[in-house]
Structure formats: C-alpha cells, structure tokens
Length: 599
Image: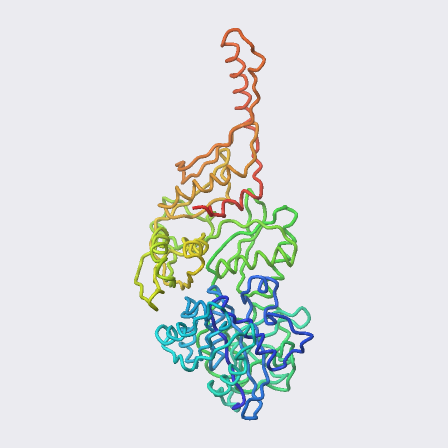
C-alpha cells in the first residue's frame, strides 16, 4: 500500500484539467503515441467540443519515481460543472489527496473555492498547481498571493506547469509521490468498498468503478450493495489503464472496476458501499444520498411518429446516465412525450444534444421548471414540477419555491451590473468580500426558478465573461406563485404554460406573446395571442389577417356601396375565425424559451 497514491484533479471550468490529465498519461506511457488523442479521458463528442468533463473517468498510472520505486498512481477524474457536485464529492471521498489546478491568467474562481471546500470536507491533502504559465497574460505572483490569501494554502508548495507545452509534468508526478499520503486500510478486515461511478457496456453490462478501503475482492466472490441489499457474483475485477486490465484481486487502497452481470446502471448507485454477502462490514461508507433532479422539462418528438424512437433513445441513455429520470407525458398541442428530471440546466442540454446526435432525433422541450411545494386548505402538501398539475388556486393555502445560495466571483468593476442583475431576479444580498484588491466574492440568496431561466447567460454578458458562478440549494421559502397560460385564438396551449412569480407574470407573458407573434404565420383571419392568469388577460398581441381589397372595384358612387362590401367581408372573416385552425410551428415553442439577447 505504500506504493499506491489515490488523487484527483479539481479546478474551475476551462482551467486545463483534461489537458493536464493527458500529459500525465503520456508521461507514464500508459498509451502508445499511435493510440493517443487529445482529451483522451473525455469519451463523448460533446465533452471534446465544449471542453467540459461530463462523465468522470479513472486511470491507473504506473510511475517510476526518482527514488527508484515504481508507484501505482490512481487518477480519479471529476466532472467540472456545478450540476455534478455530488459525483465530485464521491470521487473525492475515494482519494487521499487532490491537485487544485488554477489558471495563471484567470486566478481563483468560484468553483475553485467550491471544489476546495469539498476537498477539505474529506480531509484531503491539497497541492496547488498553477497552470498555463506560458500564456502572455499569466501572472504567477498574483495567483500565488491569491492562493495564500483566498485559499489559505502554502503558495511556496505550488507547482508551476503548462499542460499544453508539457512543462512541469514530472514535478506533478513527483509531488503526488512525495507529498500525498498513501492509503490506509486493513486487507484482512471485511470488504468495504465505495462506488464512485459506473458506466454501461453493451456486452458485459454495468461496469462499476470503486475504491477498496478494507479487505480484498476477487472474481467469484458473492457481494452485496448495502443501499438496496442487491446481491451479485463477481465475474471480473481489474484496473483502468484507458483499457480495462483484469487482475486476480483488488485489495485495500486500490482503485478499479468490477463486472458482475448487473443489467442497468441505476442498480449501482454512486456513493453506495460494496461488501461481501457473508461476513460483510457492519457500517456503510458515510455521505451516500440519492441523486435528486432539480430541473424538469417535457421532451416531445417534432413528428408524432418519432415517439417510439424517443422512447428507445431515452431507455438507452438511461443505461449510461443513472441521474436521468423520466415518465410518460402527453400534451394536446404536442402529442405524446416524456417528462424528464435533470440535475441542472447543463445536464438538460447534454441529454438533449445526446438524444439528437446519437439517436438522430428532432426534439421540442417545454420551458424548464423546478419543484414547488404547495400547501392545500385541507392541510396536505403536494410537490409539483409540471404546470399541468397546478391545483385550483382557491384550494391553495401557501406555495414554496426552492432557494439557492449563489457565490459569484467578479472583478470589482462589474459589481454594480451583477448587483442589479441579482436584485432584478429577487435576489437577497447577504454579503460580499474582497478576495484581492480588484476581485470580490458576492453572496446572494436567490429563488432557483429565476436562475434556471437565463441567469447564467446574462451573468456572462454583463461581466464580459469574467464572472464565475457556483450555487447550492439551501431551503424552500414562501412565494406568490401563479400559473401563466398562453391562449392562441382563444385556445389554451398546454405546452406553453408556465409557473411564474406573480410580479414576473406580465413580463413573461409579454415576452411569450411577442415571440409567438413573430413565429406563427399569418392566416386569412386575425389571430389573438393572449397571456392569462385564470380568467384575467394580462398581455395580448394580434397577428393581423391577410386582407383582400374588396372595395377596389368601386370607382365612385355612394359610400354605402363600399360599406356593404366591407360588412360582407367582415362576416366572412368572423365565420372563418370560428372554424379556422391555427397551426403552431415547432420554432414557435422553442422561441418562447429563448430570451432577447439585446436586452
């Protein structure tokens, strides 16, 4: 066990985590030059294009150090986005140390702090690494002072690297050997192992990624997952070296995988404890919780005959993504679809892109919503995430919405713009503090529904891309909630309904009416587009009718001749409006979700 080091690399988005992982893999010759590609741990196209890690990976790096010994360095990669904080916490629980990666030009950002606090909660040894020192804008001295002042770490211990140029990579490997503690554990004790991830293989079933804390696991062992008491027989254990390398056993301190004929990923829960069926450990690993969806949206196929393909696509995607939940849904306007729950807006975008790319689907998503708690007059409380399930307003005693604690780090010149943006979104300014002489951290408590709509895009706009944002959900608070319906030609369109705060209802209704007026084609009759709360119309736009000039043939004579023809036309238009059907194009549904970029 003295030759093993288990560590993670944690960083804010786009600080070079995947590139550093690539260089460590190349430096230890795990992959031949012919098989190597950039972002080798990122297996999805979306991860490569966007430069984010969505699905964490693990790799075991054999490294011969300067002291002559060969060490097994287990790099447990972590997702880099706030939506996947729970997965990050489970990966960190499997490590003894972490490299905290900081961009030499950007400095400490919101998720740098958030991930540091997560790592400190697990008592990890933290080694700061300053990356991108080759950039013209790199300011190493400023970043070192931030490490001392903001993070409270020893800046002299910071390792200077440029992952892109391959500078300082050996220093990182040596740092892991010299400064990170070896794992503790008893190979003779009952088996106790922590699941920190899993993925689906179409030929072998679910492949479980885990870290052994005590005991030994071998092929043929009968094991049990402690959260759901599921029992399985181990077929294979091994370590990850990009490909899977089978081993005869994995003992305390090691990180690897097991295959046990498990049918679906949802059977293996991130954070669960593995033990032997007989003579197992008494207590599970602490910190396990079910991944709960935060954002909800309905997904419908563009063409009604695409429902079966969507069902198959979601089923296959669920095999690889246990945090996605879905159930059947139906809409009068859009037909059959599915109501889905996501960890956050990025997770929603990733699922949508994967369905469209990997399964060739064309999709429509309804406006994202969150879970509200609604207390009824009879004393009961219901939890709803779908506007269609909103109860009769006369039966409601109170409504509560989820609140978040948002930490925003910005250069101080943008303080006023960020303050205005947050206060417009019903935010409460709790406090702010200067991290350096020109950067400050602002803490707000804000309603989650205001954040999921377009907050992140607006924050990036008002701070010219320099603002960084991190949040966690704190509690539910009372709110004045109303259901906003959109009526087109007097007909309610259920797919466009939204649950909004009463003060924002008029603004949201006008926005939806404006967007729909631009997208719905003109007809032979007038089309009113209305936003309504119950029976009260709060916004209206009208699409004017195509109109034939019926008085063109009247060159003279009495005005009554023209009036007679106009009255006749008016009756015809009225009759047409009563029987006319308005076809709503797919682009209209999408346009309501988009915000005005010029505001």
